[in-house]
Length: 163
Image (cartoon, rainbow, N blue to C red; front, side, top):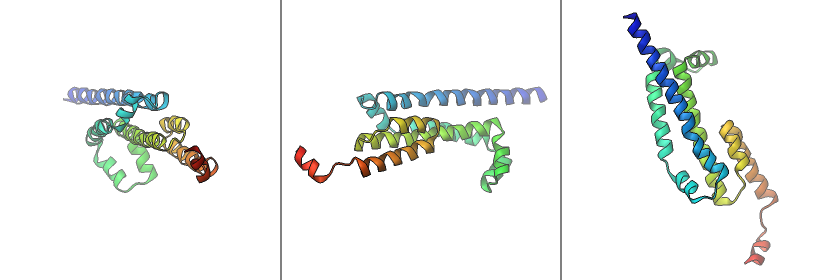
């Protein structure tokens, strides 16, 4: 019986690792398109779709349901740093958390990309930062937008003379 439990556990870990690796690879084409080919019609069409987010969120749901234990549920219900650290020491919980980051960072990246398309603000640097450190990319985009609006916005007279 102990061998079966160990075998089942190793299958779960292998599946979790496989899902983790696939999820990591899954997001890369979206980031590449937004950064390298932002004005390509395919990029615009793909980034208008919510399907990638629904797929990743479904993977997250699967990992969340399979990774949750009474201990990790307790740690999440009443978060204390030491408890969260212990919960994330579990490979399944960490994979779940990582997919959470992938979903949310890509969603924020998509928002940055769409804002750039809508307002013509430069986004490549913010998207690269968002890919590697989501909140820094968001902050970069906010600052870039503020700087552009404050120092480089066209005056009403400039707009009238261009018409």
